[in-house]
Length: 307
Image (cartoon, helix red, strand yellow):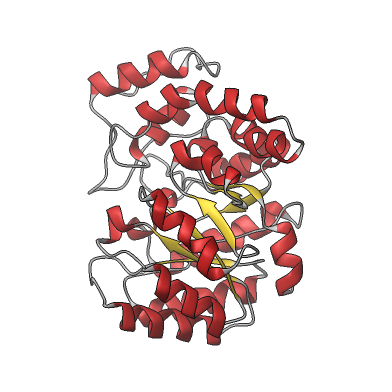
């Protein structure tokens, strides 16, 4: 996919799919493939794996490559594929991004390195080196609440000007003024995605390209429909979906993502809901709350008890 094609096709709901584990904590590729097929059948516009929701920090580098390969195979060209390839380690990020290109990804989602707290100058050098290493569209992932570093708009604008293949950003940033300035300084054709559930609809109103929403794991059809309704001009339907999903969005983030998501998917019978330590399922009290809210949106499988 060339740059112009990517800018046209990489729009809508890009679902960041969980990485399901079996009870022995090995990757459950059968459940993973079923999730991908379900997403595509539900109207998801593109698939992402091994981003924050996919527990990349709990996976080895080799496992991340295996997940990308399995996802690419299962998608089989039906929708664009945008794996997460970022890491706290620069060389690892280069390696994973190159692997994504070799596998056949349509773009790579590259997170701001976490824990290190690099300067803006260092972030520029990091992302430019990643972009220069591949002939692949790059979407930067800015999530200061989990990386402890915010990518300044000025740094992002310089990267977008200096690197033709840096085509967008996923902003998991509660500063809506910052988000508005992304399009002002990077250009209105720069692809801006919401990574915060309550900003998926508002982001479209200022010219966003879509959203990369964890909630899509549970209700992929409704999350995709927010975008579809908006582009079809049905503003009221988009607004209604925005508010209808708010209770679900709220409960799914009462513990660290993706723990509540995996609990919900377990209640739906979609996966074995295990996480690898240091992550774990929510408390029994929160699971009860998730179950109560979830029942308003989806069918809960009989006999599912996670506590």
